Length: 279
Image (cartoon, rainbow, N blue to C red):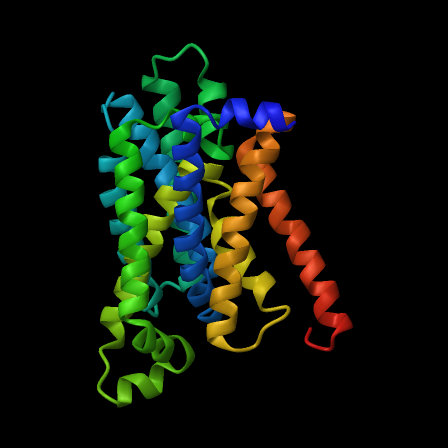
C-alpha cells in the first residue's frame, strides 16, 4: 500500500488534486455551518442540479473551459432562488424543487439530443456522481479552484461577525442597521461557487454532502459557533484527503468514498456525543 501511494503521489497531478480537494472541502465546510443553521441546507442540492444542467449545455456547446460558463449560470440561479424564496406566491422549498428538477431535465435532454459522445450514459453518470475528473484538471482549472476557494475563505473570515449575526438572529441584525439582504445575497452566491467547485470532487448529486455532513457532524460534539466551524473544517479536509487515498488504494469512486467517510464520521460523532452527554 505504501509503495502504491508513493508511486501515485510522485505524479504532480495527484498532489494537485489532493491539495485542490482539501481547499474545496475547507471552503465547503465553512459555508455548510451557515446553511445548516439558517435551514438553507436544501439549496445546495438544488444548485447542484442547476450546475449539472449548465455543465451539460457547456458540453453541447463544446466550450473549452466549461467552468467559466457554469459559474455565472449557477450564481444567477442562487440569486433567483433567494428572490423567489422571499416571494409569498412561491414557497422557498417549492422554488428549489422547481428550478432544480427543471435544470436536471433540461441538461439531460440537451446531452441526449445534441451530444456527440458515444457514451452518453457514462458521461451523465460521471457528471452526477463524480469520476477521475479531479485527476485530469487542467492547470487553469486548478488555479481557478484554488483562487475561488481562497476567496470564499477570505470572505468568511473578513465578515465572520456579521455573518454570525445574520445566521443566528436576522431580525435583530436588521434592526441594528445591518444590511441582511446583502449578506444573504453574498451567502447565496458563495454557495453557488462552492457547488460548482465540489462537482469536480464528488459530482453534482453528491456536492451538497460536502456542505452538509461536516457541519452536522461537528454539531454532535460542539455547541459554540466557533467550535462547530473549526471542527467542521477539520473533518471536511480529513475526509476528502482520506477518501482520495482510499479510492487510490481500492479503486473505488472518489466522490462516493468521501461521502461514505462523512457518514462514518457522523455516526461516530453522534455516538460519542450521546455517550459524553453532548448529543
